[in-house]
Length: 172
Image (cartoon, rainbow, N blue to C red; front, side, top):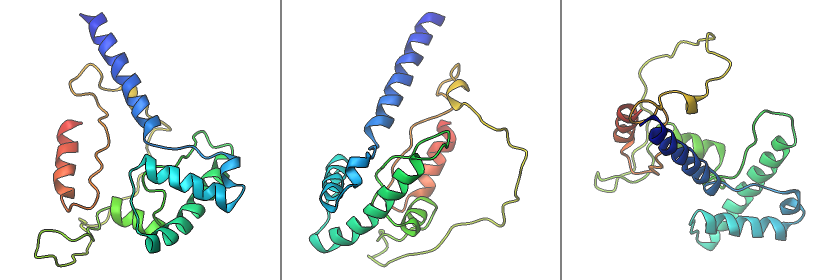
């Protein structure tokens, strides 16, 4: 029984690793050598993440993408214990990513097409500095169903942040 569980867990880890690799793109020095190579990288990125932009928006997004790609490549030249790569937020500004990922619902939602904006917060969060240096979440919770770490849910701007938060809390 324990062997079967170990095999299933190994398969889950391999699948999760494959999904991470499939959802991001690495940047090489060759990709940054010219505008043409950057444009080719942007086109590959758009294809990889199924991103469609009209021509006017694409020019602005390409400008943001170039900055992000250069920043990621420069960071990866350092000696940090981890590397960055291009994910599906590659052509977003820092502000757009914060708005998208941290609670600002700015897309049109089912309230008659009106634009809603605002942050959902509950008071101040106290700073803590008693956290461990690292936690290997892959090693925690595998004896339980579901495991401690579940896949990231990409909700886009649907306005159902609360539903995804509840599902994540229940799942693990």
